[in-house]
Image (cartoon, rainbow, N blue to C red; front, side):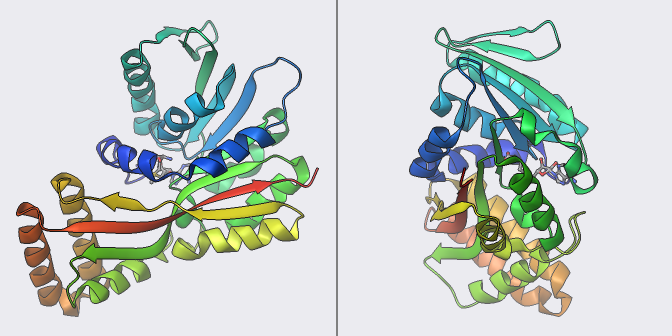
Length: 292
Ligand SMILES: C[S@@+](CC[C@H](N)C(=O)[O-])C[C@H]1O[C@@H](n2cnc3c(N)ncnc32)[C@H](O)[C@@H]1O
């Protein structure tokens, strides 16, 4: 439905985990206001199969209640199994809560996770942000438009909730070693990112700076930090997936360059198979905290 498979999200998850900026996550934790001893209530926009929850819940510690929102029923269906498998591997107990939530008992904290199917393009304003302590999203903002980010800023400004938006691509793709046609492929890839992903023309690599400026105007304190993927030569699967995706998108964008792009892919694939290529993919993490 969304074009993002659970397999792809599983492949990228360890690279995301290694790339996240630890200090912004700690500052997000400190910015969460909590009523006395009640659980922290977090909403994750475009949650996929739950990677953001798996990354952040252990950092936030304490009891938590998560609402994981996505429009893709297949990813939402995969989510429960993925979270259960992850929690069980950590030695934590998982069970069905009486209201349908998944309950994870770590021995020190209880985390309740509820999935929700929602089209965020149409129904963003139906989310009750006032009923949560903080909003998170990861690997999502490059899909959305300036209008949608304005709507998000307006919602945050009404409710004064902190936002942690991680792993938004910023356009840097650096192959080591480089070759001359990297640039051509990268430019075609970037122009594709400006397409409409269901939210109007997407801002792609400009999303973080646009949102940062919008939230600063609403009185938020905003910080951004690099959270790049560093994909070493041993990660053949990830490197091949990314190079094939870049080539396919480049050919779709500019069919006249198909033979150059095919030659580029053949050369990059050979180097990957020989363990001679690595890749850095630029991302940005953004933390926005309300003035009061
Ligand atoms: C790159 S994936 C990231 C998923 C997850 N945050 C992660 O890091 O694994 C982008 C996500 O946006 C979701 N998405 C795209 N359009 C959406 C929409 N209109 N409403 C809700 N979710 C949407 C997709 O289903 C997908 O799960």
